[in-house]
Amino acid sequence: MSLYYVQKLIYELNRNPNITKRFAEDIDGLLSEYDLTEVEVGAVKKPDIGLLYVLGVNGQILMHYAALWKMPWDDYIQAMRDGIAEHGPVRNGLYAQTGGGAV
Image (cartoon, rainbow, N blue to C red):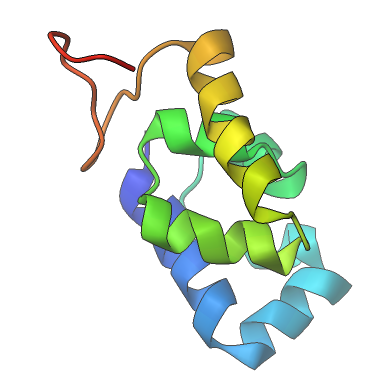
């Protein structure tokens, strides 16, 4: 998994209007510039907020990405819960779930 590149892409989408414009106009071209797996590309394009969260994308970055897609706050929170229910615990990154805590 290339968590660094997924987060870098989403960070740049959140901060750089030129990247956001390219994302809207040529998503495949833009994504080809990042070292992403097929699963990550699919999750970014859908967008699958829950899967991105489970893959380890930082929630602070992810919430702005959800806003880019005009996702309401409550739907964003639910998408993360649904991601855990569907894909299992957060696998990587700051929010990795190692057990022992309530989800």
